[in-house]
Length: 189
Image (cartoon, rainbow, N blue to C red; front, top):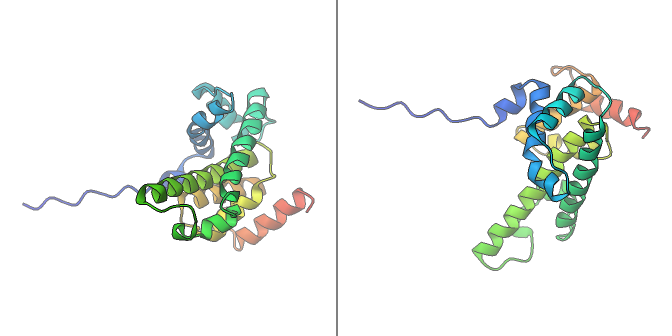
């Protein structure tokens, strides 16, 4: 008897379907190590409280403000990694790994690939968290993610955050252009 093929896990599904509070809490928990490297120890309870407040659009508390400062430093470090290759975040998303200099062996290639991927994930997810916590200086990165590949999990998270911030419904026509206009207007651009 032939066994049925195992179901593939769709890693985008949770990002698209979790309640917003859950999504924010999970993202915060994924940043525990980078935040600790910045001197901030975030407990699961802290992450849950911050996520609840963010989903309720409450003003950020003391711990959330500390997370904002630490996340901004994490993003700056990741931007510096990309800048070391002469790349902006948007350019990095589009760059093929073989176009990045500095590797001569498979091990060096893999190390660079890991650094590039980690920098992009930290910038994208960090920008999403910062925006939810009221710091919108990196919102353009969220648009970059959606425009680069809207089906990637990071872009799905960016989409949810942009919809949350702009107050648009998920099925809104031209949601991306409308979200950009609303958020740029709110930021005074």
